[in-house]
Image (cartoon, rainbow, N blue to C red):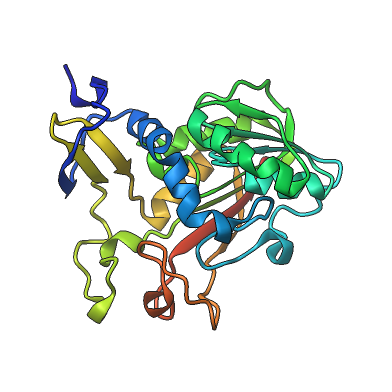
Amino acid sequence: MAPDALEPAADEDLAEVAFQHVADDGAAGRRWWDANAAEYLDEHGEFLGPADFVWCPEDLREADARLLGDVAGARVLEVGAGAAQCSRWLALQGADVVATDISEAMLAAGRRYDEAAGVSVPTVVADARRLPFPDATFDVVFTAFGAIPFVPDAGAVHAEAARVLRPGGRWVCAVTHPLRWAFPDDPEGLTAIRSYFDRRPYVELGTSGTVLYAEYHRTLGDHVADLVGAGLVLDRVVEPEWPAGHDRTWGGWGPVRGALLPGTAIFVSHRP
């Protein structure tokens, strides 16, 4: 039986961290987010807010960036929504929005924010590669660090976004910048530790060999090829700069490395 077919024991310990190809169809992402939903929101919930739209650890917010354009009255779909904070913010701007995520636990944990936000949005448990919506349903589809880093076949996410978009509709996705995995989380010296072109994913394996966590690296060219291959037109690429006075460290994102290298790439595209 392949390791990814194994369901890890509830108390399975982390045994190995590596960059290597593994047999994983994206199920590790669902398991990890289901198991860590509450802890993740306890750590990052204050920064993300109950109904705010934060694109990335660099603190770029949709209220300032307006990458989605005017959403008032628009049909909007969020994929990889997590706790759906972005979707709540969009609802407050007048959007007709639906939030999806592969993790039922993340969507459920996010409901803690409904009362504080004064708004709730419809949520659907769904794989971003197999969205349960008809063709040409939405004016805007987006994801802020959802889905794409956690599946081996990102092209399928782009293809589904293109399918459910109406002609002229916009697809915007924020991902880990391709330079991220070339450098360590601790940026002392900023010495590259692996090749930018090494596409082996970062994985965490349990004692039984189960893939507990997997995050997939792609080059800038890979991301563009996936978008174009899905029939989308790339309009712009945004690389948020680290703002002065922003001292929050989030994994490999922080002010030391952020002053020198981009940590996030946001691709703005549309369906022709």
